[in-house]
Amino acid sequence: MKKVIYPGTFDPVTNGHIDIVRRAVNLFDQVVVTVAVNPSKKPLFTSEERVEMLRESLKEFDKVVVDYFDGLTVDHAKQVGAIGIIRGLRQISDFEFEFQMALMNRKLAGDITTIFLMPHERYTYLNSTVIRNLASLHADVSNFVPPIVQEALIKKFST
Ligand code: ADP
Image (tube, rainbow, N blue to C red; front, side, top):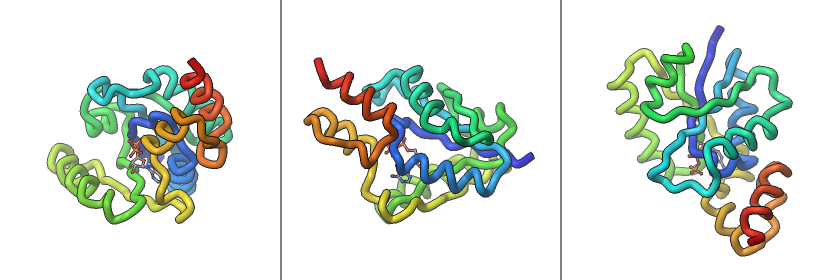
């Protein structure tokens, strides 16, 4: 069984992330979507909220499991028995950081391979930071995020 993990902050999950999951599901037997707890990043949503929104948004995919981790990505990959780490590449600007991280992870764990997937062009400009900023200004983000995320954002910024 070929299993991969797809780690990220997912603060919150967007349609771009879901596009990457859909592609990964077509290639592998199981995709473990892993929320990085990352308290130093001061996320808008708690890890529990991020996990819950991912579970709801990805419930159509039988091959997807959502969990969270606090530590090294490669350790988590080994723990769940994954052969690789999925990352999304939107544009050249993602490349340098991702390349560095992939090589470092390879040094840490040579048997875990990083796999880059490109989303549909319509998602190349989409990221969670832009979504949080738009939502904080009460913009309509329904074209960019699943309904449960839209509702959560409205709630978050209504007070
Ligand atoms: P961000 O980079 O927006 O803070 P995450 O840390 O949650 O988001 O990202 C997790 C992974 O998903 C990264 O590999 C990132 O490049 C990828 N990703 C994020 N947004 C998109 C998108 N719109 N299309 C494709 N991949 C994406």
